[in-house]
Structure formats: C-alpha cells, structure tokens
Length: 117
Length: 113
Image (cartoon, rainbow over the protein chains, first blue to last red):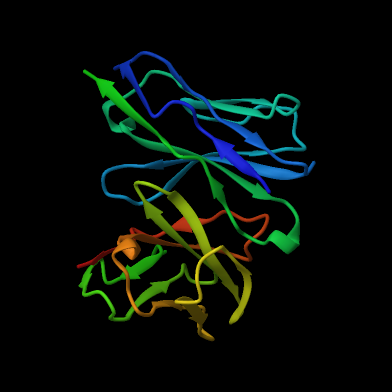
C-alpha cells in the first residue's frame, strides 16, 4: 500500500522569504501523480501544484515549485516570496495512475504554515 | 462555472442517529469521491462513485455508504452514528477520476453528541 509522510507538523516563514515543505512517499508503482493541496481556515482544499511521475522536469506554478526526486521518493514544495495569504495547512497527496485505483488520493498528515508579517 | 457544493455545511447529530450528506459536483464531472478529515486520522478516503457505480472503497465500516444519481450528484450516509464519526467530510469531483484534477467542496462539519 502507498503511504505519504510529512515530517514537519508546523513551519513558519517571514513574509517575502522562501520556505520549503517536505514530503516523502512510499510506493511500488512506477506511474503516479503527486500533488500539493492548500487548506486555508475556510477548510476548502485548493490544488497548488501537480507532478506527473513520468516527467523529470519539476512542476512550477508562479511562486510555487516542487523538487521531485523519484528515486528518493521525495516531493518537496518551495514557496517563494511568501505572502500572508499563503498561511494554511498544506497536504501532500499521492494518486496512482492505474485506472483500477481511480481517483483515490492518499494524503500526508499535513504541515501548518505560518507566515509572519 | 459553479464549484463543488456540499450541503449542509454544519450538522449536529446524536449518537445512534443516521445522517445523509450531499455533494453536487462541478457540471460535467462524473466522478465524486468522499473523504473524512479528523485531527487524529487526517484525511482518509471513503469511496468514489463514477456514473452511478462505486468504483473504489476505503477501509471504513459498513455503516458508511453512498450513492450517486444520474445527474452525478452524490450522497453519503452514515448509520448508527458514533462519537468518533465527528469529522469534516469532504467531497471532491473530477471529470473521470484518474488522470484528471480533483476539485473539493468546502465540506460538511459533522458533530456527533
């Protein structure tokens, strides 16, 4: 079975600085997707960034980028120029690319990010 | 385009009762998944429906069930509620499940007293 681990329950960053959130996962599959979701106090999960395992190039979305290390099964999220609105809980998630596993997402325990003004 | 809508947003029930939660997916989306979020267990997958059929199920007791209608709207039901069922229940919709993005609703906060 696949597992996702986020070892940092809480992180803090100064506004405008850069912060990196860590995520490791375990799987025997070769084809899968990895995601970072943001959950603000409103509780709605918002997709931040997505990475396909077959792509070597790291995904980037504006101030958000990932460092995907497939061999090490590591998938970290870097937030540049942190803003107050980035404060939230961040979840790393795994989804198999096998159609038999459908849309099931496996989540890590989450990292609460505090942004200090 | 309207997002994923979950109703009700908040619910208080008594132990032993049953409850039904509703999820209306984004128009055109045929896959609906349900997740339970608690402080202790985190986010756990309950089940997924696609075109009115349950495609995948998580490791939850039979008290948790769901269904999907022809318009893709989905309901989940929990019978004989226990205190431990208190949680935020999140619904996610996607075009077809695998290989497509999942968009989440704002959740239903269920409190069992």
